[in-house]
Image 1: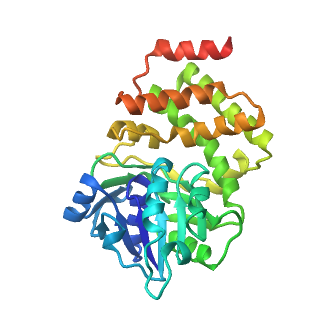
Image 2: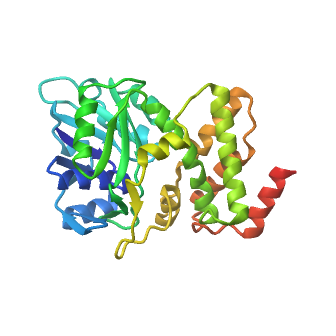
Image 3: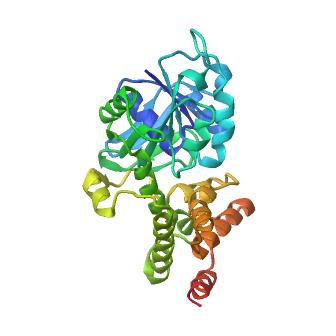
Length: 334
């Protein structure tokens, strides 16, 4: 198998780097300064045992790649960038006949639950991956992951459900590369559980670390709205206890020399000034389900709007004035 990562940021770079160090064939797809840095110096992967400079091959797009039947495509970008990449890669020819969309497995290693639907319109063999992987990408050519003894816990399965030999083989490769990899029948249940935990991403991005009474009150409210809409939609997912039992102490965050972890994926988008953010597919998923099933979701709707405005206007991460945050909480309690 050759793993082709469509996106080499925090998630794609860390998983790809770990697989490369484990002896697997890996190709990273990136753009802009990140691609230039990868081509010039390789991938700089910082993990608890040190910083590793990895000569992982990198390309800018599908026109630079000759696909074979042994390739696995791993989609590892934010959801707002998925459709464009799927459109680029699905029609690409595969050696021996057919296209990538017809023949190759595509793994959605992403937050949210919309990517698999987008992919299944274009690819016949779609796999979901629930990514529990604390990782950071803030500068070109570099990613870091502070988890120990494993970098992350990754659940993998066919979409919409089931598993197969390909999923088992990918999980085994992950398990040999500093992850706990699981091939599961119900991967989307795990992804809905992760969706709930990601509802704080927008709050952290606009208002800073979720600590103290005010932020914790808002975080609990966002989570309660999420739980209510999933219940109304009849969507089941592993409980917090089940999730903790699976993770255990397998991903304990340790200090990394010269690579402080300062925030989650949405916070990192604001710090890098990407101009967009994934809130439409995290908090926005809760808003969508709420509208479909008649459940009010005022806080998630407000966080979705705030995060989008911060990204669009280039506002600094965590810069929402405390008074504005308090006003938001008072409005919801009115």
